[in-house]
Image 1 (tube, helix red, strand yellow):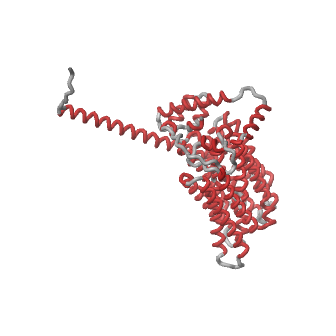
Image 2 (spheres, helix red, strand yellow):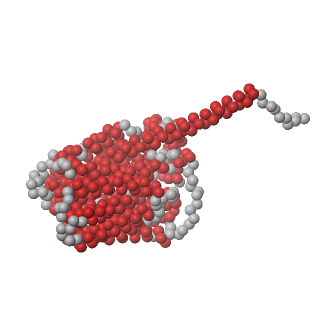
Image 3 (cartoon, one colour):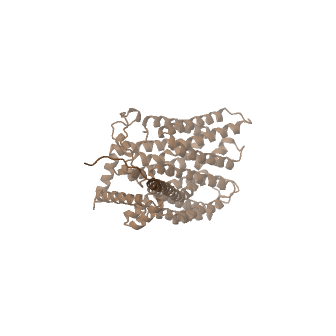
Length: 531
């Protein structure tokens, strides 16, 4: 019979056990440190990719703000190339007319030459456009240069978002994607600052620097691993992922397997040899689906009210609008630079607030703040007395408050809406529709703003801005769903409900059934997106 006996360990055994335990603890500690360093290296690598994309986005913001620099100089009496208000409106608006065309052209190239390749390709026409503008001696060449710049900006828009989205951790993706709007604002700030010091043609030559820098920076970062796997370049995809994930081989292999599986499933779902008519019918059927149509309507109504609240009008016509407001009491170019600084700072603030606040709350605060500032500014323009020493300060505070509040939510949210509200199956179609309609509306508003301004004056313009901002706040409260901390699956299920308004939704208890695993939380693309 075997008995249960106790054994007294010798001092040597105790020492060996302690040494083994110490080695085991050190091994675990080293593994944790290695994982932490790996994650840190991965985050740094993803930030470097985003940095290259932000150079592209900053370069894309410069043409947006350039008309605010160009038109006042061309309207001066001593200008070597003088334009009237009608011609000036075409110079400002034609950029927005060309942008959606560039976006449509980027689609085939996105799959053919890759995301990074598209961004590098977009830098070439942007440089050509600026060169044509800088060498222009007539209005026609300026218009041609603006069209080419518009095509380039449209061409880079989708690849920039996709490259960041396909290389960043899901936890960082939203923050890094929204950072492109801050870069956009930085481009506007740069062109205002240069316009305050240099002639319009010199500014055009300086604008070539950023796309060239972006082209070089993109040569130093890898192509999207998802695109490489789709093109059967597995070794290059593995090498890119190892760099993007800080050398974490286990995670890289898991991601490659996940991507390969999802891409094969995507190819399997695609119809083979379908006619053009059937493809169009399929697209229309997708758009008519309530789960697609409802978010499409919400985003487009939001964008229409956002544009009517003056978000981009004040970018295109900043110097002229400031001149109308203060009657020449301050340096208009300096004031425009200050508004651009305000826009840039508040875009950074919004990136942080999006991590803490819900989309609805941020949008409502932004819209109400814009409305209040616009209406106060309009009211003061009516009531002010000639020669008052406080005019400049009151108007400056109102204008800067308006720009800051408008940037805080109304400028930023549309970029998130397509990715969050549109279902995955229709994100390409829906995003294309939204981008096309947005730029078409922007073209008309930019083109006809001078005419409306001559009819109602600056006071009337800011009254319209205030009313539309207030309507935007009401619309957000009624219709915009809250997407913060909700999975894509939950958002899709919400749009399958019969209601259109958020306030009439069927309220259900949110269950924590979608807690991501460690592998999913660090995955290149969340597993939930493939459900």
